[in-house]
Length: 440
Image (tube, rainbow, N blue to C red; front, side):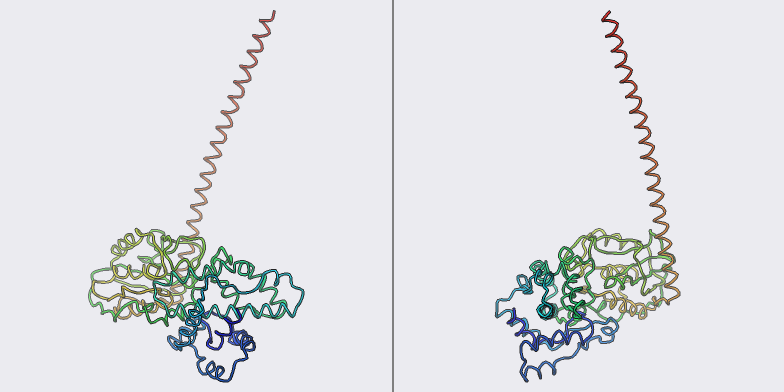
């Protein structure tokens, strides 16, 4: 394990994982540097190559995302080091025994254990980021399986990550990198319901082997004439909980019959979503929080409804090629006049926040769409809240009706049981009387 850290640390810089402040990240890396006694050449190389990715820097800063160093040979070297040593992330252990951390009464030893845990977690995080940046989109599924196997190998540590964090805090230490890695482990290991997928944007967008950003291959044409009178509103939601998602509705007001949302049909939010999982129309629910909204006017609402019906016939969901972003693209294809836009048929692993900016550009170039202001978004949020409340009321009424039905059935059954019991009792009394008379 120490050999693994020694080989990695001279080449790694800031990770795509959001470790907190740069000072905290430097502290974790600094521990590794003290372990290896980095020589002057190594220090010069590290300082000379430490820089954040420049691609879409404004969005990066807005999202508070720290990105992997964009000097490609570093990533290649990290991967090559593992390849030469027959390294497999699936079986790699973090090198700490859970009982040593939870039961140790030696404070100095415990601090050393926690520091080592954080440093090795940093090395694993950098390795995973490099793989994300330098693999084809269709190898992401294999990579997620490898990482999940790594999580399973270290499941005791990750399962108790909150306890370990509390121990570290009580000693004035942080294990922020370890905690971040744990958040990406499956729900069965780390017991986290939400994987911070937004932290993967850096290496995903830096990957030269596929396009995850350009919704259209060229600027859409302006629409000068149309006979359509309908409207379509695209909502960017849930950025405070997940990495963002899309909802859409037709017409002027929101209702359960004109509101569409494509999502996964799982109980948790994990790296499984990169693979093919069950999908469904999630519809209106109480957890929807609108962040931004875009409205297209003079579109064909019937065509949108038909496109959505066709989309939902395939119940497959995947972040790679069948996510909520892809569903909105299919809707826009039907809503806009033919040949207005040349959509990217190979869009892979798009992130909703950036895709929304591209949808805004489509609205501007066609002349059919505009982004709604805060007041308009507030009205839509109230409509969602009211629709959800009405739906809950209907469910409550239905449940009350059901309760009354079963309660009525219970009364009938109880009455019938009582009548049967009385009948049996009378039969028994008659038999006893006959037996008594026969005895005389």
